Length: 84
Image: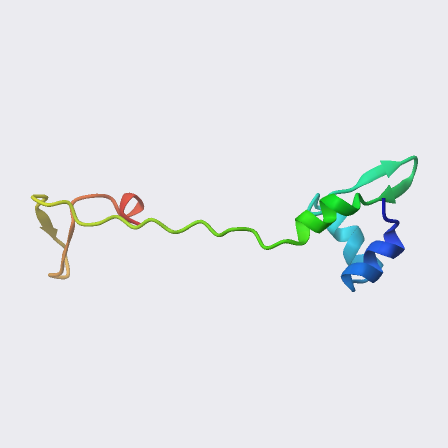
């Protein structure tokens, strides 16, 4: 278990920044009495890059008719929220 000072030195961040991460539950930590402690293995895992999810975009549906817009451009008959 790392102390707050050890964590800050290891991650090269300020104590203020570390406390903000704790406040937002953005970093794994434990409270031992009134002291903050950071499990080294969990912090190491937390530091690893997270895999990004790919954005899925809707393809035009074959056979779906296009509805003309007021400005003369055609648009899909589906609501925009379902397309994006």
